[in-house]
Amino acid sequence: MNNKNSVEVIINNKIYTICGFESEEYIQRIASYINSKYTEFKALEGYNSLSTEMRNIMLEINLADDYFKAKNQIKEIEIESEEKNKELYNIKHELIAAQTKNDSLKKEFDITKEDLSNAQKQLIRLEAEIAELKKQLHKK
Image (cartoon, rainbow, N blue to C red; front, side, top):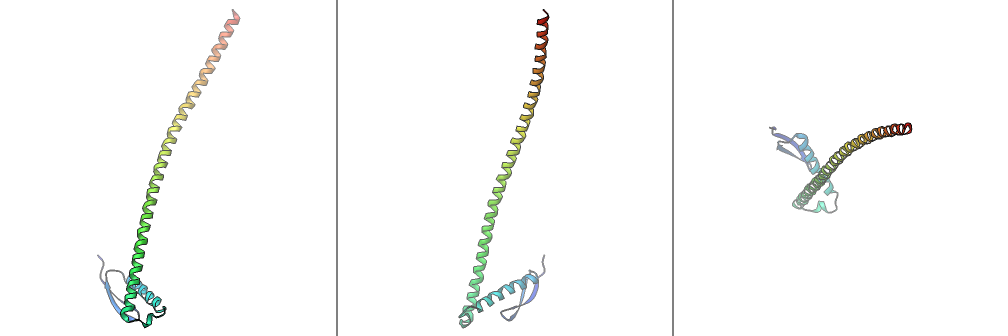
């Protein structure tokens, strides 16, 4: 089980102590992300003239928007991954079917090749028998 960490972070030029089970690096990354949002908003015209409450609401809405966009993106990636997995599954089955058919055709080819070889041997024997019969007919 993870230990609870107390981490001092600076958010919007104020020091806060955050307690949690995540690593210090993770908590600092979150604080850094929030600070980047504050910086982004401070660059907007009219932001600084808003009340503190309105600035915080804008930040909260923006963070929620980022969260839901990321969540939707994950859902889309999962759907795409599932579709690719189904496609891969189908391709694997097509490959197995093709390999099975190839094995079957190879066996059929080997049998046909052996039949041809036997037919050629029989043809040679028959030709030899015909030649022998012709010799016997000419002797009579």
